[in-house]
Image (cartoon, rainbow over all chains, first blue to last red; front, side):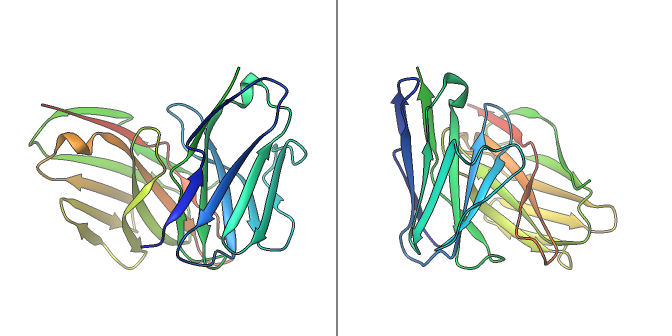
Amino acid sequence: GAVVSQHPSRVICKSGTSVKIECRSLDFQATTMFWYRQFPKQSLMLMATSNEGSKATYEQGVEKDKFLINHASLTLSTLTVTSAHPEDSSFYICSASRERTTEAFFGQGTRLTVV
Amino acid sequence: KNQVEQSPQSLIILEGKNCTLQCNYTVSPFSNLRWYKQDTGRGPVSLTIMTFSENTKSNGRYTATLDADTKQSSLHITASQLSDSASYICVVSPLSGTYKYIFGTGTRLKVLA
């Protein structure tokens, strides 16, 4: 199966700072990457979809200026949480697929804690 | 509105016992239905995937069934192990035109020794 790696797995940052999360497809080229957010005991919520070389498409209610997504290459997408606040503390998960409509493989997730 | 509902919300069973998790969906038409296992603090891992024309799929001790007429799916776990303790998520992909997965709320399974 395809491998998707996220880094870091855990991060603690101070309120007001920015934090970057990386999502890499290790053994395939990912045309499309998805970013999700998951609160405790809840399901995954899609935040945005990014296609290599183009701007990300954000879901309704997700602030694009706060959650910056870059998909500069076919193996790497980054999510930057800017000016983080405690309410941004959550579990962030990425997934990647070879094409827009093919199966997506999930990363291990990143636990963000804003203090 | 496309929805995926799972039951029970949580379940506790003894090691070695079998259990069945349920998934009801209103997504129609749909491309495929998947069951994922998500360990605490980890990303989801695919267990099974079924298209609308399939009615059963097995992966080791995991067997998924699908009834497209009643829009129900189940995941049966045989001879449970402690390592089966996790959340199990039912995910439906709408038919072509969209790539977005619709996630169920999951069933939290705890297997006790």
